[in-house]
Image 1 (cartoon, rainbow, N blue to C red):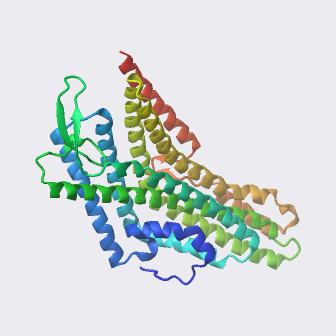
Image 2 (cartoon, rainbow, N blue to C red):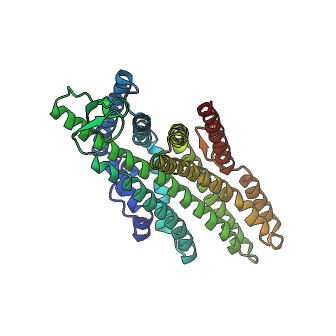
Length: 398
């Protein structure tokens, strides 16, 4: 099912989804373009990253810890993030029908919105998603700038303990000693280029996938807010207009609940993988931070703190959209109850009571159907990680 050149796109749709479309289309997994060319592009990028992961794992097994702690953990981080990036490219294709239905719903919402108040609410949530996308893009691609100084070359390293000098080949990420000096120069350049492409794909998939889910969740929250506000428009005096309003209200409510269910089904596995991968990376960086505190390495301490903050931020955003989505999906019952329902016809009141009952079944964004993503879960994750880091600290002290 391909929906190229969708005529429903307008200026507001471009504002809300245009940047997401450019990023995700470059990876070949934008829902409107699930065609042969996108499939080829996705397969090329996926194969490249699988090759990098396999090479890094082979080097880890062959050479192990032959460099500094920072280099080793950087290598493990690259293996983890590249594996996660592969899933971010594959899963949209696996859930392509759900992805297409969700995106169609969002595009229709922008196309058929017909009043300024609703449009302002939608633009408010679109602006939040756009700001988060821009900040994440600047942070992600800005972090690549220091890597530009690590151009292909042979560097001289002096052992501080015995003053021995060794020659190593430079690399973008991971231990330099993982690259054999017996490797031909052309093979080394090829490895460097593949690693550069892998890191660029990794950054694009991180920003595109992560923030796109955030923006879709924000849009759905906006739709529930609009629906909650619309209950004020029910006509008190005319019964048939009330019936017509309730009929459309229930259809819209059911549609939004269905979209929410599809959204949760399409992204819960990805959230599960990303959350627990981030926890692993936070622990690795926490270990490195403890080592840097022992050696009074202020630069490394600052670097690990920034990394941990960014990883925590990702988990926080998933927890926040889960909390916010649950709030707005259940807020409808409060909006109905606060309306002067006692002025309506008894049959209409009965219909509203059924809508309230339906709203009592809260929606939860989950991580693999195992853990609800909300602020309570986020606090529990923080407590667990800090408990583990406290144990590691005691091990260092001993």
